[in-house]
Amino acid sequence: MLVKKMIQMAILLAFFAILGGGLVAFTFQITYEQIKANERAALLQTLSSLVPRDQYDNDLFEDIHYMRNETLLGSDKPIVIYRARKQGQPVAAVLNSVAPNGYNGAINLLIGISYEGVLMGVRVVSHQETPGLSDSIDERRSDWILGFNGHSLQNLEEKDWRVKRDGGVFDQFTGATITPRAVVSAVYNTLQFFQQHRDEIFLNAN
Amino acid sequence: MQVRYIDIIREGLWINNPGLVQLLGLCPLLAVTGTLINGLGLGIATTLILIASNTTVSLIRNIVPTDIRLPVFVLVIASFVTAVEMLVKAFYYDLYLSLGIFIPLIVTNCIVIGRAEAFASKQPMDKAFLDGLMMGIGFTLALTLLGGIRELLGHGTLFIQADLMFGQTAQWMTITLFENYRGFLLAILPPGAFFGLGLLIAFKNFMDKQI
Image 1 (cartoon, chains in turn blue, orange):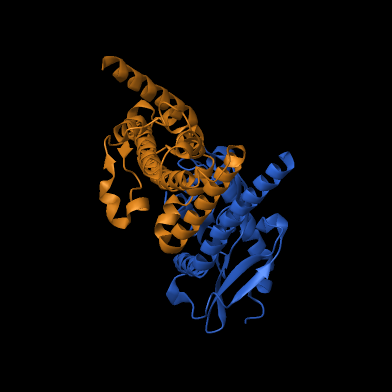
Image 2 (spheres, chains in turn red, yellow; image 1 turned 135 degrees about the horizontal axis):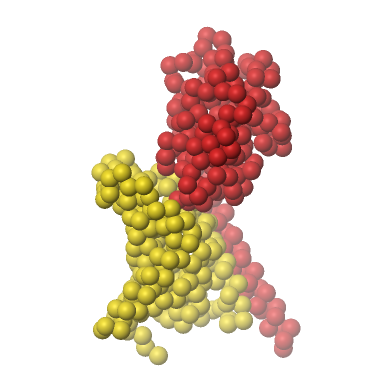
């Protein structure tokens, strides 16, 4: 009797698991293309806010390159580098590097660097930082992230690449120091990577 | 036992308000109510999920034996939240960018499973639907109020970042009540949420005594 009941329950539970899984799979099927298109459009908009559209004439989505450097780019996986060129000459690169030490996990960044090594802009692609407290790194929340524009390894010394509390030049937020600290050090590391590997980054146009 | 519609409405909005009386869903309640708009955003998203999960749970209440009802409810809620997240991401991408962060938080919200278990699993569909709607509105009101109070004390503004939810045209909605206000840090920090919630509950109890 008990066994029969247990089997009944198991079948019913399996039925609902399949139903729930089916609903998710079905929704995934019908939304997948649209989500991809939305993300691509949003990404293109972010990329063109880092590298103005009139400065390059190649297709950023085609001219990409993958590189891996766990210490400087913050991820053990290869990261995407979008390369902007005009008439074949390198103009700028946008690196999709990671700040691995955010308050709540990794912060995914897009960092635009001109060929000369000057920051054209930084944007946060995704993060899980506390809403309302440390999500001011998001451009839609505050102007903080724009403070990187125009800086380079040349115009700021190593000790300046920190938040103000640590003796650097970048603001922290009230109640949240860990998040901006992580972003500042990720930007600094990425600039170093760019300086060391610039020729490699722009190598072999496709 | 018959439950009257008017009782469901009063329970959700006031007597048994999920934010102020049941104190369910404290985790998102305290985490995201830094501003009025954040509170409103989480409230609306939670309301939608509550309605969907309540209605479904009520619909399947007669075919699910009590022994396995909890895992089944969890399955239903998790599938709904995931599906809603994908749908919003596909068809309302701008809204997703502002609300997206709140949607996964809803799974952690005890109100949803709480209402499924305590109400929807014993009531017909129309009442379960109404209960989801009213509990959702009650929760939204508590969140918005707490968010508003904390934003007012913390930043001296109301409706800051309204454009995240209503589009660029909504920037006019932001009201700055105190010019050059230096901010009251405690109100935006997590302890401020506890103080604010405590005061709101005290105020509600005071009102209840008066009536």
